[in-house]
Image 1 (cartoon, rainbow, N blue to C red):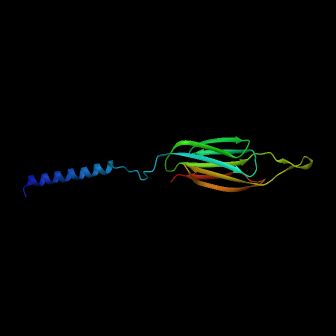
Image 2: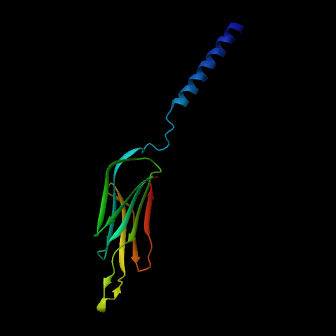
Image 3: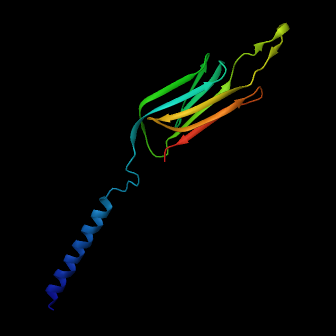
Length: 145
């Protein structure tokens, strides 16, 4: 084989390899084609007793705290863009006034609370809690996968 043909073959081979490298480097490296996506996110709190509460909603690093004077509570973030790893959290803290018992003595009545996070039409996290006089903060969370 003459040296000119060898050089042409080497150049052609290099061009093919460079083309393959360029193609692979430009290919999408998106490992999850579902994201980003736009969804409705609904936070809900229902209880078996109408009580005041402090409710905190977290969407990634954005937190909103609401003092609720009457339950049930619901808040929807409409048409929200989310990515894989987007974090949601719903917290509930009893903030009610005790029911006044006989003789002006305050008394406590235990009750149940249901915390729910819904994405679109799918409940992604829901949990029931028994709320007692000594119950602290209740919370649920969800991370988009």
